[in-house]
Image (cartoon, rainbow, N blue to C red; front, side, top):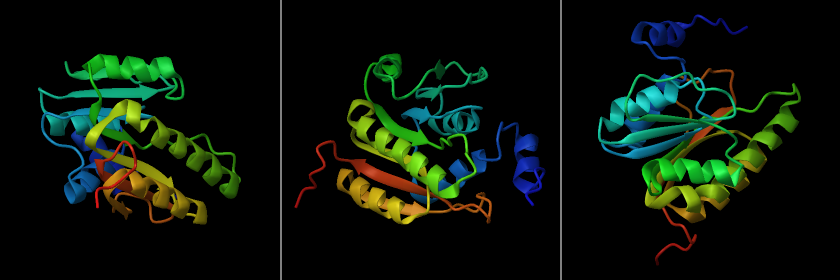
Length: 202
């Protein structure tokens, strides 16, 4: 059984992070350099805001962190934090996100999790469908050469998603950070060097 107050939970409380998941992003960024100083970053499925907090620490004052979620994202005390309540599947929401910075983002992040039904196979398919939608939105949201980080769940279908996503990035990495629970089948895909037309240079 998962004990809520594990080491990362306690450490998140000590450092003022809203979620233990903040440490996943810290570890992933340390390993793969997804987010950089002065970047403009979009966080899809951002509530409660733990990844936005980490992102703001990394990008500094000259970058902007925009978070989208169907749930309310509690206000973040930073001038360069923008929160949008809405569904990323809504074109008006995507347009609002891009309008917030006036151009496409340097990096797109998603630690989004759908409400679980209890059927592991069905939940994995639903999550992968959402991930596929986000991938299809990237030409609207992510600049050429930008970086992408998304949570997946390991399955045969996820392998197909990774193969498809690989067409759109110069380099793709998959990993499970130490902060992930050992019992979880989650893994993260980091894509670097976005190729909007899906055609890599020879």
